[in-house]
Figure 1 (spheres, rainbow, N blue to C red):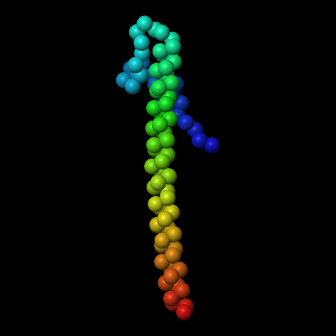
Figure 2 (figure 1 turned 90 degrees about the vertical axis):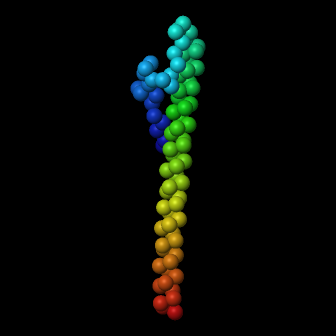
Length: 78
């Protein structure tokens, strides 16, 4: 299960990424909050993608080492 960061705990009105309407239109506030959550979800997805790529590279290197070891072992026993 994936846990997305909770933006309601980390965002404040002093955050430059959040643009609050001084007139206090609640619809615009909801749109701003939705945009903020979308940005957070995109950042989370980007970090997850980087982690997945690193894990794949690590797995490929492990299989390469195993294949090299198996090849050497096969040559020694033949």
